[in-house]
Image (cartoon, rainbow, N blue to C red; front, side):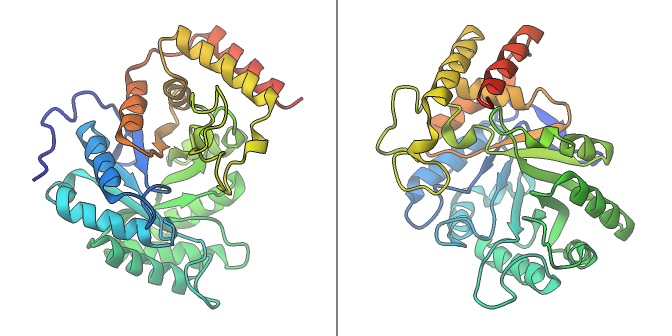
Length: 332
């Protein structure tokens, strides 16, 4: 029987999520990959146990994670039942809806029908009575924002989720949604977007919008799909994402120019006494507006490595300038 480590809260740092009563660990674990039908359930179980033992209290899923869609929630349910259910009150568990889940016109986007049905189906798959956070996964260009916001408000009032989040919204869309949700009496807790050294779009207004509205920020793909690790510094491993048929990273994307920048970033990390992955996470967390960095992993050792970013020293102005110059060189 799994018994969590007694010292699990001693090394993790927790940040206030916007203007709420919730704190999240600086490192959270996402179940986007490696929790589907083709993944090892024992490895997934080891990862969740390791994460919780290290003070990671936030696990993030979505209805379409797998593959196939829904399978990550089902695997999570089995591991919860075996190991983590006694610790349910110590966990923040989130899921999302917004992408294609079933045939016909009601299985996608942001209608009230889709969001409510998706939330209820996700709860069944996860074996939970409620989510701590339920996200709208992406903005819907056709459904009125008022309908989407009203559906999210309903999910809170009906006890299906404690808090509401948004994901992949742009600054203007997020601002409008935050206003609607406040007026409904269910303020948005958190916004989730991709953010890394190599993908800095949230700096163009989104981070400021969230901070000004008292909304927390959690950043997915902080390691840019594995690019901001040592995985590709000496070639493309055959068992890597870029070495396979992943739609998210191909070998062609790892250009000589990018590889040169990654090598230089790794040198800066080494001078700081960090791995490249640790430095990439510390860089994300340099912003006070960022609540948590949402990592993915294929094994427990990766989680153990990433968590060490929490205790790292801050960046000097010279280090930040060096990083900026390297990243800017990729745009030329």
